Length: 365
Image (tube, rainbow, N blue to C red; front, side):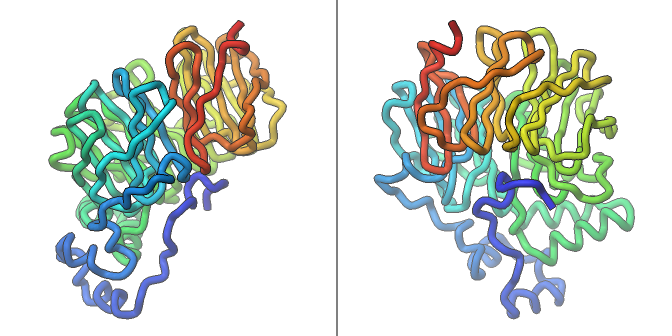
């Protein structure tokens, strides 16, 4: 199982009602419509719009990104927040689901995607003002079953079908308006080549026979990297057609990967461990952090500095291309789930208690 709250926050259990299990046993799940499945207990949140609340800016938020002059943050119960003043004030967007959202990305000043629990993929074409559902765990499970090519993959697909759409997507990466990846728990991995209008299950492409959780997907140079639990580290050098399992520097879970201006790769994860590679993941060196808390977020700054955040509320900065990290002040002391760079040296960070603005000016001098 995964090594931290980063996966299990807000994830519903897999115990199903007896009536629902009977439907699954009868094989009715694969052909069930979205509307029918979403009406069942626990899955009606797929059709319930996110509740508008004045307390949205202090809700548990799991990701934040920049889209032009706008900041977009996402989190629990389908909350999406927008800020047009560098995070000073926030307003809530209209979202058609009330499941927790775990990651968000924009490819331009209008087009973006967010992913989350119950296998939800949302798209916006108006810079986050409104969102539509493009994909969900119901369709994901059915595609996984069709794509299985061996007994192991069939077993995983069978479990997805039996459990229902309760598995979360945990990260996404879109190369442009058309090509994008979404990944998540139990080896969930899907690809779109048409902006999310249709999806392909690419789980069979990943050398992940144990069905380990996938935490992050990034493109660095011409390679696509996927990090996961128990030391899982995958790379594709042919635009995702094939992946190879790399020799990881440790067996701990990796929650993310950030790249620097000189091509260095910084891998971070469980128990404060950080590793850097300067040869495209050929070899790795461990970088002491002085922290025993899991690193949950990473960010490359415009000036070449690298910033990491831990689940204990620590901020760690490198100004020497990942050779060393030092602690910088986080006045809130809150564990940070994600970060985005604001203007004038400001850092906008999400946490389980909302969104914060932190100054990095003193740390950068």
